Image 1 (cartoon, rainbow, N blue to C red):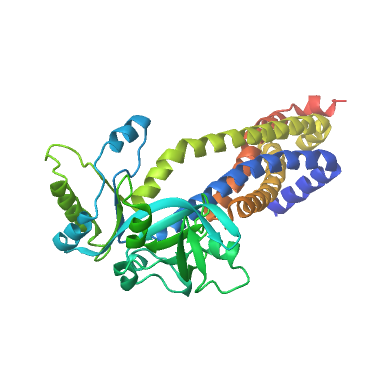
Image 2: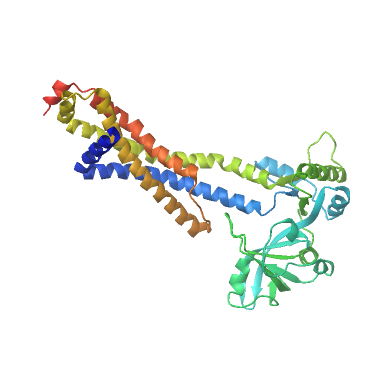
Length: 406
């Protein structure tokens, strides 16, 4: 009954001053919306990166000459490393019994043409036929290249969704001839759409490594290796086996660090989170300024409300209301309007973030319990922090002076 009475008094007070209440709600809503937009966008991007990395598989890891470098000096140091050679693949296959599958990888960029149409800066990828069993690459149409294609250096190509839409939007691409750089390839398959957080992950063509080497030569920086362990449980031991084989082949002294990088999906994600941590904190900090501004608006308007309702406070005290009753009444009014603004702000923040990510990066986001809790927590905190001083001022008014207030 007490809550119902408080609610009715608060609604009546807010309704009498509709414009003031609307401005207060708007101030809180803008603050919460800005914070929620940033949080939702960051959550969506983080989830998208995690989804991208999850296609690598939990038992998969990479070996590269240069994995990640946190500074220019570190990059220049790693640049002096010896490249990873094709012979390493056979050494690992024979010397690591915990390795299930291994495929070398090579990358390049070239212009891809079909008849009179062309697409520049397409990513050219190459690997063994077993690559499709190591990474989760789904086939939408046709097939991936086979062992026979590898052995006989067949000029066949497996294309990404972007290539298919660009050149074959209304026709079947299988059997058609694409020019990758200066060489012609026959399309044998199309990948399912991948999507990506950064860049267009569907803008690629995949060719057999033998065909790649014949056309582009051995990669100047060497190959990278994609390796799948027998199981997730054996992944750490498989990585240790590969490390020992590589150190022996590359004659790395026992007292020196590896001259290659081994990466897993988890280590890549951890590294990305570490790099972007301060950026995320900075964005949230900047957007939080609008929350403080919204809080100041709440305090100012509540102070005006206390001043205008001084006689009402005096009458309530004369009728027996205690300080805590007045305090709770004004604090409840502050919380009601800020919580309402918070609800609208949370919804608006998700809508704006979703619209931005879908239009610019093609990513989907869904509201998380954490994000909703943060949004409503912020709005409740604004009501408590910036509403407590006006409420305390109202509660401490002397009833005799309040009754004589004009």
